[in-house]
Image 1 (cartoon, rainbow, N blue to C red):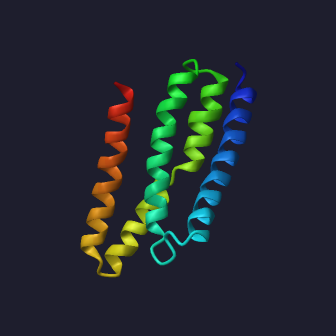
Image 2 (spheres, rainbow, N blue to C red):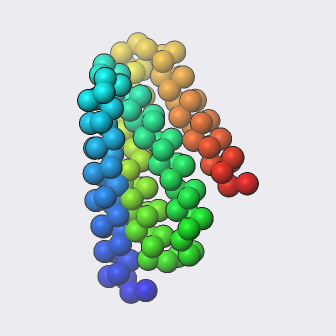
Length: 120
């Protein structure tokens, strides 16, 4: 695979992933989930992207254009670890230490557990 093909696959997938991120959040807001606690939308998106990543690795040949498109691009654009980190800091700044702790531990433990269960 050429470098240009790889770059285009990641670029296209990243765009799709970013739109998925936006759409998932907007959908959750539309049905009343996460109206005042948007960080829980991020929490759920991180879990969904983690699960999706397992399936992407299962269906795509290693180091293929498809894997770059779906794993690096779509899942990378969809998951939101940088937002997760920012929101954690904001919770701490707002004096919501217990919620920040539950948010961080829940995000990490549930994502790892989901992959652990699905990788077996």
